[in-house]
Length: 110
Length: 116
Image (cartoon, rainbow over all chains, first blue to last red; front, side):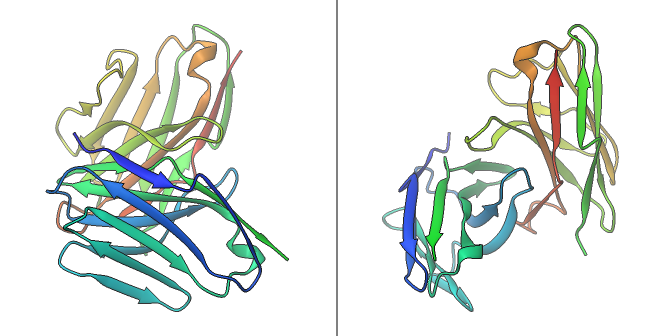
């Protein structure tokens, strides 16, 4: 089955700096890769996603890149703000099945 | 659009009793619903996938007789934790998807279950 790894597990950055979180997946048939932001005690919120026929997608300060050959995808947050502090999860989907990465706790220091 | 509700948001029950959690898609038809379990500071662990009108598909290690899932309509799925024990205490989150081609899944707010 699919296995998703995520690094780093924790990340601290200064406000205004960029943050990068990387994920790898094992199943080459996976074709949809969402990123979720989860604040403490709340539901995961989709922040950006990318499909396997696209290499890069950007939405304001957030971008995702996908390398299908290497089976890895990354989340890039620029000009970080304190409200970006949360746990971020990547996921890979094949058919109906979603597999989540273990998460990255991002702290943006003012 | 794409709002998913979950009820109750928090429940405390005694060991040995059963608890039912409801997951509703409020403004779209959810062909597929997912049930996850999340322990503190950990990732989402998929428990089962359910398609409307058919039996749920459980992940390895999840007891289908203990975690009963019903997806009777395109807007409602229920998870019943039967004969709950303290180790079942967790955050249970459902999500809903319009279908295989839509990709995106929409999460409910979660239910915190505490078994005493």
